[in-house]
Length: 165
Image (cartoon, rainbow, N blue to C red; front, side, top):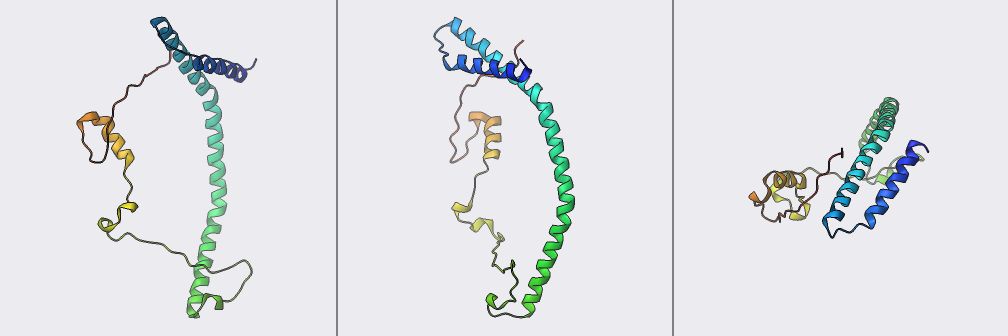
């Protein structure tokens, strides 16, 4: 049995054992703790097995993107220049209607809209987004010692599991 097949077999067994787990006494609690440590150890083993493969694939991906972009970027710059130059020409014609522009198969003129925020304080509430990352960072650091209007802070217990020995 190769390493990947063995890992898959053990993982399946651990998942199956966890689905039928019930804890009603200390012996079952200790069994669950052992199961949890086995799961954590297997996750570590899986990482040790696959992380080097993933790292190599990631490096290959990054190198491929660099090579691709070295060819595509100059073309994108040329495309942008040509579009700008063509639009400049069309604006000199002072066309009344876009439909009056010279026709070329595969090329059309579209209206595109953009924006610039000139006064954030005047933005309607539906365009504002809470900074959940910042809120989480503050709540994690301060716990129940901080009050943020509009935010409910609650505490829950979690189990921290390190690799078993």
